[in-house]
Amino acid sequence: MVDTVLQVEGLTRTFDVSKPWLNRVLERDHKQFLTAVDNVTFGIERGETFALVGESGSGKSTIAKLIVGLLKPSRGTIAFDGQPMSFESGTAMRNLRRRFQMIFQDPFASLNPRWRVGEIIAEPIRTFGLASGADVHREVARLLEVVGLSATDAGKFPHEFSGGQRQRIAIARALSSKPEFIVCDEPTSALDVSVQAQILNLMRDLQDEFGLTYLLISHDLSVVRHMANRIGVLYLGRIVEVADSKRLFTDPQHPYTRMLLDAVPDLALSGRRRTPVTGEIPNPINPPSGCTFHPRCPHVMDICRGDPPAQTPTATGAAACYLLTEPVGS
Ligand code: SF4
Image (tube, rainbow, N blue to C red; front, top):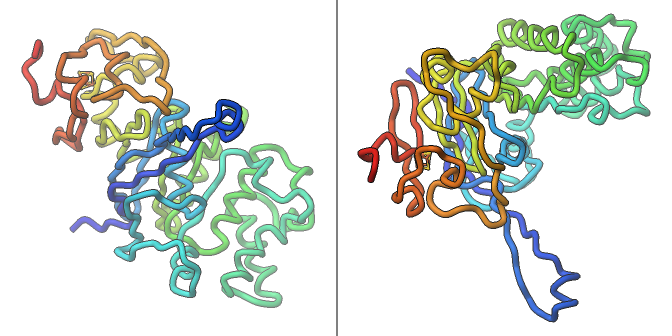
């Protein structure tokens, strides 16, 4: 039986990007909106790593912030373990939020530079009442060792560590509330290539040891291939394809997925005609009609400029493309 830990339904987030100063100068009341996340639906099973990939501006980091409660959805629902998440405070929601955490992209910005490492890791333990007194220090020491640091590091400040070590501290802090689910937002993109693999391997080991479920946000397909069981591909705020990781890399169905893969020489598939990378991601304030990928798509048909394509089932997931439903040339 499928054990879904996180279910996102119809998630939409719109930002008001009107320019009041320009409206004043031009004496008008012109509103502009940017839909960063548009009707996104997906589920994540317990113990798996589900990755969201896409170019910058695809909406993947906005989805991460919506899930951990840093942003409020404009529409749609997020349920954790079957319980709808609300943005009200309260004991039930506080207990629910303890069970999921976030690892941020930049370990330099995400750790308070004025706090010692021990205080940084102890704060969630105290906030959620998971230990008190000397037990807090023992738990901090244990967590530092779990992430490959030393208990004596608790007395140091973040600036005394390298980037990779700081990301280990951030992981220890994320683990300190004993979460089941962790959103990892580009967890290695700010790190030297030489330490990226060490952090990814640590995350995998911790997943096995603590039975964690990950939502991995990344623009780096090599990272995603190393980590993910299933992958969702985002384009201009919409999911255009979801598939098992292996299937996505060997048999991508959506032209945008093919374009992304073909842009990475190590991942480009042999024996298949390449989909060249063309054009830029359009302005999300004024997105193209229909399939928003149509201005860049080498297979565009008339129908693609009309209604957006629906998700069509594929071997291990779904893709939103008329090539899967329409005779070519329509
Ligand atoms: Fe290309 Fe049309 Fe498919 Fe969009 S729906 S990816 S434009 S073929």
